Length: 403
Image 1 (cartoon, rainbow, N blue to C red):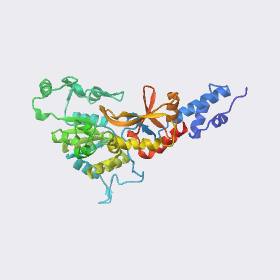
Image 2: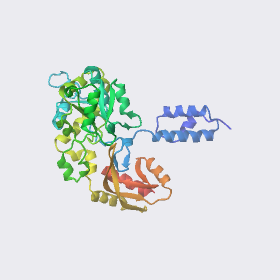
Image 3: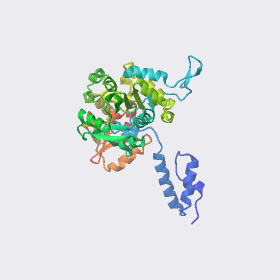
């Protein structure tokens, strides 16, 4: 049996991957597999797997609006990728400061003295604590046991605190912590003067939207969710939250608080290693303006949540009007997701496909030219439009027609 060449192996499978990548894969396969047919099968398998791992736009039909595995908050990206005046002052025609306008806008939105922006909220906490340890001689962090968490498989709060060199004092219990618990911890830590302590609120979720919007659209699920503005009014020294959760923007960490402390963080020697790119800052600026202008419904996250049950039902009617696939529409529940309000749901119509071999259909969905990610419940494929952009409905209809 004749051996197959690298070029012939590369040409044996249709793929839009760069040729150099395919050549490298072909060389590696032929170094261990000599049988041409076996080499072709292995090459096709590896190339198809790699193709599916390319980051691409997908349709989130899971109903989980802040889906961590799918990029959390959806954003209508408006940044053009062209040059910007990110560090150029147009008023003086010289080098300028980053984020002057964004900082002022966020100060207005939150009612706070100063704001800093970093690449994610884990950075917000680590950088803030490290700065307080190194520049303000703080050596102890008192945390309620109910806040000692692990997220994302590797982020553990005690480990983050340990990396800053600070000591962790746990107070209260996992389900209840009283003011007296903190008072006791202050005595243990020999921090008798309460004015020598700082209050830091790692809010995480980042709810800033006004009650009027929530009331207008019947979103009472957020009634018990703490707001960034309220945390500041309550007197915290620093509050931090994610840009890509309830704030509804891009991945980032926002640190707000007292002017002296925030300036200290901004001027900290390693702050530059955590700062945001011009793309992120541009999108944060856009989102902040939408809040200030009371145009929150133009923020995709809030636009998804405000959709009524009947609006979503009407979209399902259009999607299914020209196909014969067996299905039923049930009264389902959509999730907020992203670690935010894990037990709170929104009522939504959900399409349940009545198909044989659901696993096969699932693979067709996710390997579609425009991948569609559904929810699978009890082995059944569920499609929830709560997390789907309306201009993606035609693609779902097209797929259903192909079955």
